[in-house]
Length: 560
Image (cartoon, rainbow, N blue to C red; front, side, top):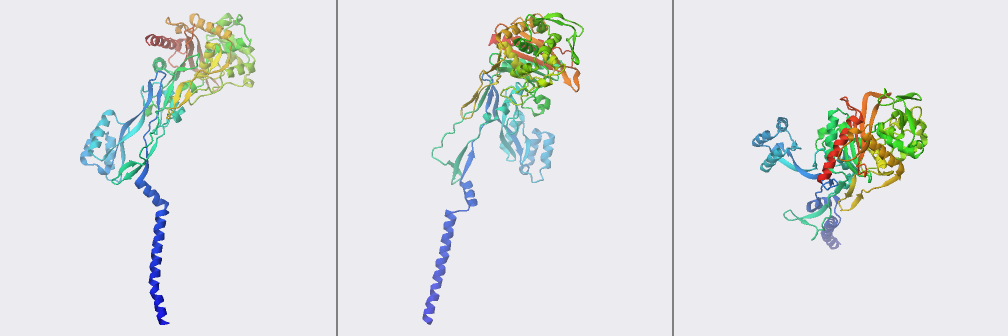
């Protein structure tokens, strides 16, 4: 019995040995075949990783293919205070401002290892800091992408601007952000011994992307001429705001769009609240007499007035709870035919037509022309304007609307409606983008002429165009006349609404016209808002600007 017990005790060490190696084997198998996810991620970061490929934001160009906005890189600089030597500090003090130098000195005895010193260096300072970066590891240089506006502030309200992360914040940059944004690609690389990167594949597929491009309908040469004359007049007359809009009335293409005050997209200090607003699409104002041809056209088509009718026009007319007065309340025009209501810009005569009008029909016709609704254009911030519902056309309101008061329009709405008068009665959808191509080379949008609806008869619009030509030759628009081409148009002077009525001494002087009269190719609206240096009548302040622009545009056409 003692011998049997001895043999069992001798077998026990072998059992433990087998058990030990079994545990080790199972553990190794589990570690190799089913590793912990944290270990797996760690190893992947050590031996292979996704590397982002650089990308740039797209190009914005004008109708002639001239680049207006491009993406470039510029060096920006920081320092690691823990690495700075006394020699480095001496050289930095010669380049940086005393304030920045003082901040660097104050960070020397701290744990700070990164500190911006110049994120917008001048070309001269960038060269000096870049040279210092090559000498010492304490100066850090980073190439930062940024948007370059090739003509500085030209067309700024149309183009817009981007934030520090290159995201569009206004204008085309905002409205077409998803197209202009070129998403960065990625490739997978592995590290061989010695930390040499290598492709995961023998042949990597080529990343086929192109630079996105948004092409506008605007001509930068026309834009320069328009801005030059508009801004000069606005400044000389102390205007609070001003706009100019030039378009092709036949197609709806926008050729120039300018708003004052303006800003420089690359100068953050110029981005004030007043300057950022694109008044062409966002400002609502009472159009005054520039609205009269449109109202007259509706009245003629609806049989409210006849072309051969004669009106008696005293200096002022009692209407419901108020009075309608001529611009010079001391002068009565007497007996005036329908055409001369426009030529002489009679408020009293137009008010008589307004009183006759059916409120619901007139409201429907004005809505059909786009008033009181957002205009469909490829820009953000488009306003609706104000067009009262028919049930609110009480008292003097119908007469006021006939003379361009009691409603608010945007400059874009007014120009689009007037284009229908010029082109024979077709309301065209205005467009400012000619074509948009994304990062895959696909054309995602193409701007084309689009007729929204017929709003006037060709007979009525022909008569209106003739009357507007006579505004220039006989009436209030003589200062818009030029010997280079025959123009037609309408002046406007409107009061500015305030609390409880109209603000005393505040006006909007405007002029809208087209040329050549015989075969119109251009339509332009000029509005000078709240000038403060004495002049405010549209025929005095806006018509001369119109003339100057037309004449310089004629020179451009001659030499192109």
